[in-house]
Amino acid sequence: MSEANLHIEWATLFLEGFAHAGVREIVLSPGARSTPLVAAAARTGKLRLHTIIDERSAAFFALGQAKVTGVPSLLVCTSGSAGAHYLPAVVEADTSFTPLLIVTADRPPELHRCGAPQTIDQVKLYGDHVRQYTELGLPDGSIDGLRAVRRKAVQATLLSRSPLPGPVHLNAWFRKPLEPQVVKGEEGSALAERLARVRGEAPPHPYPPKGAPNEEGVQHLAEACRDSRRGVIVCGPAALSQAGARPVIEELAQELRYPLLAEATSQIRFTGRPRPFRSDAFGLFLASERFRAEHPPEVILQIGGTLTSKGWHDYARLHRRCRRFVIAPYGWNDPENCAHALVFGPARDVLERLKESLMMSHHARPTSWAEEFSAADQTAWDAVATGVRQADQVLSEGRLARAVCAAMPPRSLLAVGNSLPVRDLDCFCPGAIQEAAVWSQRGANGVDGLISGAAGAASVRPGPVTLLLGDISFLHDLHGLAAARGQKEPLVIVVAQNNGGRIFEQLPLASSPEIDASLLHRWTTPHGPEFSHAALLFGHAYRKVETTAALEDALGKAYRTDGCTVIEAVLPPHGGAAERARITAAVRRALGDRME
Image 1 (spheres, one colour):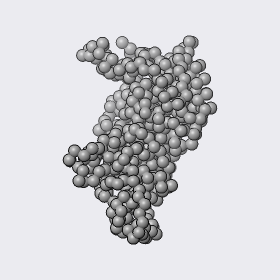
Image 2: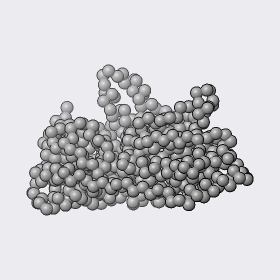
Image 3: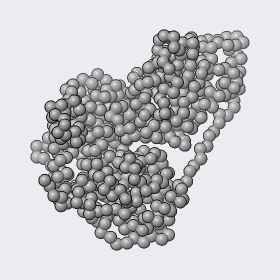
Image 4: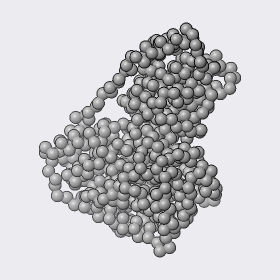
């Protein structure tokens, strides 16, 4: 039997297994050792191919796709250090419970530990960050071997989605010759017969169990709500699918008369219309020591992941003895280590059962609790409106975030970077400003791979996609601009260009007496490159703006243009910290804090 011909046939059957299990996207990075897999991908016609040179960018591209679809994309790379570049995206997939499939090509065992080029130990390369590691070994042309490789593809796809979504790694050995060969005679016929026999057999159809919310946990939660006049519903980062829970969350907030605090990445916030009991500016008004002290909650319903807001964490720490219930499908979202209970399951399912239980016995009780939160929310938004108003229209972090949200076409996808941009959305943009889904990488909260991830999201989601990120994140992922080529609809990348990582000016280290102010640049890292060159290198449209009017004009043109547009929004380097400090101080004064 020709081993080279076996390689391509075996690899084709392997990829057909992934396609049978529902995988639709395969992201390839070039390399010799993965030749059988790449040739098989082109041959099957059942997977949409994306070729991205840089493995780090390719991994975030695939991750971005999976965050939109909920279906794992398949990554394929060559042997050696190539697979190591996947690690940051694998970590994000692990911590955000995003399904992802990784196939690394490897050299055969006789070339290991003997100085062979492009050969490293790839066994369990990603450690505990994957749900399973499978060593495929060399292609096996026997009937059992062919059946097994297809089954392993189906099995890996299932394990990436259930019971705990995340990345799965498979390692495949190949010997030279790697290229497909023309095989004649008996050996080719025998292999063809075995392949036909296996393909004539239906692949397995795995049906994972569908879990229901724990009834005891739901009743425990219902009892706490029945007993409490002063409750809070707070929503943290969540997958795009959590948007389906929005109606029941809003219904519960109104029925219980609990204020609803929703972060930008929760999928609950951006409705494009005002909603009762919404208090989107909670990060600002919870910065008030007086408000925190005078509003102790009796129960907290935390939906989704760990929140970003410092004001919220200060509030939760002050009221540690409050019964706090964490509701999320996966993860132990309790960094304060003081949750009263954790109820696991999709938020919609848990809260529908809670609503049914409360409807049987709960009666809304008059209280000023929610109205006090609403009044504080209005106070905060008034301060934001005053703080971002400026006659000369010079851009600031607040004006940038608000202008981007307002300009997006309704129901489009907003991708947001970590560090300051995600906090700017929370601080400056009420949910009524626009209806949108929010894509983020809040699993590991890294600043890397954001352009690649947004490009991946845009490749599988119809309609415009907008990415708002900082300049450091932009520089971290310049190769993502290559991944952004070929977009059929608008992909608008808005870079908050304030010459460095300005979040560090808002952290305690900026005022620490132990750190000389002259050393702060070691954290903020001012840079100074000309961003237009990066955009033009990859053939993207580019605009540089310094005023709100120019930004609005650039956004309008970008949404009327298919493909990728990079908008560099120039901001005063130190303006963000000053702007936020002014607004926070104004809110605290209005809420009665004593200011030193």
